Image 1 (cartoon, rainbow, N blue to C red):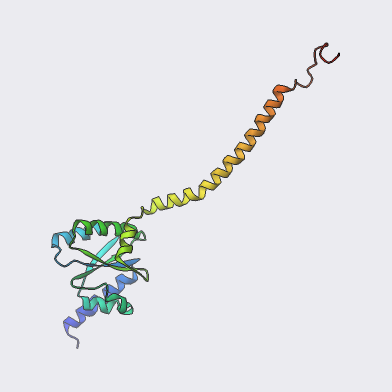
Image 2 (cartoon, one colour):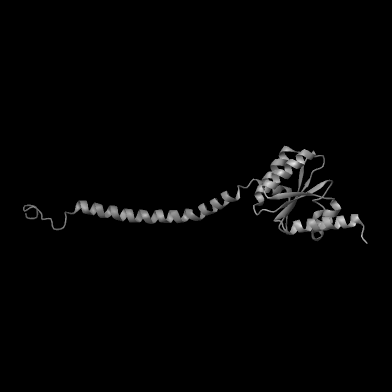
Amino acid sequence: MKRIGVVVREKIVDEIKENIKGSEGCFFINFNRVKAFSVSQLRNNLRVTGASVYVAKNSLLTRAFDDRKETLNNLIGQETAVIFIHDKDIVKTCKALVDFAKENEILKINGGFIKDKLVTTDEVNALSKLPPKEVLLGMAVSGLASPLSGFISTLNQVILKFVWAIEEIKKKKPEIGEQKPEGEGKK
């Protein structure tokens, strides 16, 4: 029969593994000496962005991330929390996390994973500076539409110049069917 402590630890490791599978990525933060109220505030800020904060012993985190142990050593230290990102828009979570870290300088972002790619602290900071997903999509559409609108404008100018040329020719030539006055054509 297993002891209760072993069962509880196995349950925690399983829960972390489920969070890993169901998330777009995760970041590790060191929250040593951060006040409990601030951690609650961080949880609330991240919940709005589609992320959750999970606090567990480092040994349990190491067990849960057993396939990434060699890179995990750089991410875990002292009191570590994992932020699981459940929303596809990872930038929102990065912004909320970096903004919170600026307000609470004690909190340290250690890096993390987006899908299976290792992300450093500098990359998390760089992601936080990106515009929101909707703005990026708008920029992409604008970039695709710009050459098309330029092409259409050029075609429009060709047609307009043709029409203007016809108008000028019309002004210089007398109307068809209009007769010249009798004295003009003879000499």
